[in-house]
Length: 315
Image (tube, rainbow, N blue to C red; front, side, top):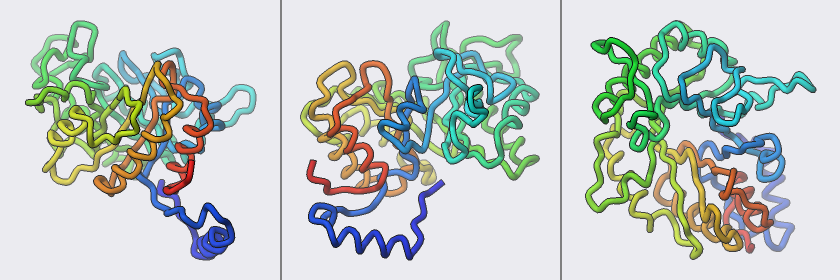
């Protein structure tokens, strides 16, 4: 899923950069392997702020029988859905699907869903999106071996047991279907880790995951970077020393519902920070919906430069 630039093309780009006044100052590097966004209208967002590498999908009541089935949040097209007007995939095969589900699946249902994914597509599954805040009566549903029926997970310990069981079930499918490119991640809520002494009990063991992801939102009008965010720093601390498991940002929202005129400054600051401190970051994905959506050109340009791996643009 990485973007490769062939040597001949790279030479042309270097020659072109040298022939223009402002691009000669640009450095080329990507802050994350995958840079994308969730959007209510993903194809439109892809045209406006893309090209996007990812989209995020939510199935609150568990995975459906097929990856073509719509999501439980606003009935959005599933990862493998096709556009009825054109017959084309809504999300091209080079788009990675981040798929979260909030209730445990039976082995047969899980296998059916996984088998419906195109083997050429990269998919990252996450059981129980933001488990730290979804343990209540309407939260994530577990079905542990000693339980008589499915019920809310309720505790960090139950969540971790169920997460590990689901991770093993996915691995069992992959053992029998090695052509598929499916991985497993935990997707946490950054705000839970804001106390001075954070509770790290929801962090699953590294043996259960390919990635640690987090959803982070900031009201930030000053252009400061994530390194100034206590919740982010504490989540990083909770996921440190976990056998080198790669991190990612699955939802990134800045000034949601607020002023977006200086949003580009925060994008630029976070790009520099992430490049300097997290050289192997897997994912950086916007939450491009509701009050987090932005339309000003400076912010759009800044995000597209991040997608292209370019820094130093004089916005």
